[in-house]
Amino acid sequence: MMLYSRGISSSFFAVVLLFTARPAFAQVAEIIHVSSAQKQRATLLNPEQSFDIRSPTHETALILFEQHSIGATSSLSYRLRGEYDSGEDTRFDAQVQELSISGLIGESWIVNVGKTQLSWDMSTSFQPLGFFQDGENLFDLTDVQSRSSGIPLVAATYLSPSWSATFVYGHDKWSTYDGLSSGVEQWAARVQLLSDGYDLSFVVQKPAGQSVGAGLSLVLSPADFMVSYVSAFYRQGTRRPQNQLLNSAENQLVDFFPFSFSERQSDTPYWRAVFGSTFAFKHADVTLEFSHDERGLDETTWSRLTSQIRYHNELLGSETDPDTRELIAANLWFNSQTIIASGSQQSYVFAFVKSTFDPVSASVFSRLALQDGSALVGMTLESEINPNLTLSANMQAFTGDDVDEFGLTPIGTSFQLTLRYVFN
Image 1 (cartoon, rainbow, N blue to C red):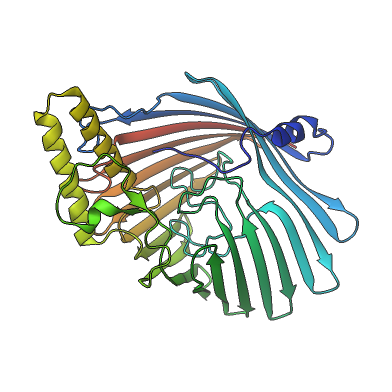
Image 2: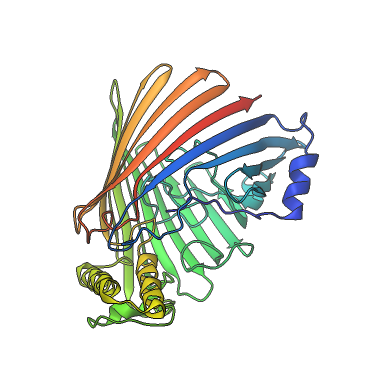
């Protein structure tokens, strides 16, 4: 399972910005070193442990970022990342993670132009309204590794004392369209109502080639130590790639890539929502969330997927012809592409607990797939060695039976050690 961040990767523009930015202009810079190790395991998706999983890996990144005033009513924000990977394929990568100009027009309008993030959803494990922000990363919940990246957009917000309205056009044309969150051209609008007791928002959003969808979010604080929230979104059709082999209960061996965007303009309704609460206790912060996404596989389609996987394993065990074995291995890879990092099934429960005992903090989390009971669990230890230097250790493990979502994952355990030094 790979971690990635969107950006204008390896572009001349990024390199020039990164290495011509004057240190006096960059109020904050940081160096991050990440060493990762992943333990591959034999599963029904990886019976011969043939997945190309590099381990260990070592990455060192230099990040420059600042919000710089331009005149009295506008500012320039940027975050530039240069990354050196010292693994088997040594490489350098430069990214413009964020680069935008924002300004006040009159007394009530704020305009933002450039590559930036707009957060319309406060949930941790799943964001139904996360159109203009990076997808959730359960391997780095607080973005210690500074991988999050913005979306190219133009946004205009009208402010009043009790409400606001935001209009956004975004076009992630530098990224490859994948049917999920990458490479999307879209527009959206949000009306936000504010009071002492709640924060209520109504949202509409339309990507190119799809119908308009509508959603809402509500944040409440019923007690001083508790914040509760819900966000939901509805649209007919989905751009999530569909595995056409799951349309039939018959097991198949095919010689073509079986995914398409066949449901992008369909009349089928798809709901997605998350309900959560965060509690601030004396010695720990606790977050609990339930999420449901009808774009995922229900029990019938998941059963068809696991039946395909078992069928391909049986063929691989009995076949001796090299060309046929290669075709079977390709079909197992097709099966694996149905399982995505954001969740392949429909319903999940997420729990996160964090305690801080200066200078060390410890956290644990679990994401449980309700359809089969498998889980991704993780633990983080973080220590502030001094005001500039932080050391973080993360470990994740995938648990479940052989046909469960997290039991099928070719990775059994994953470990990251992150050293972060901030210059300011």
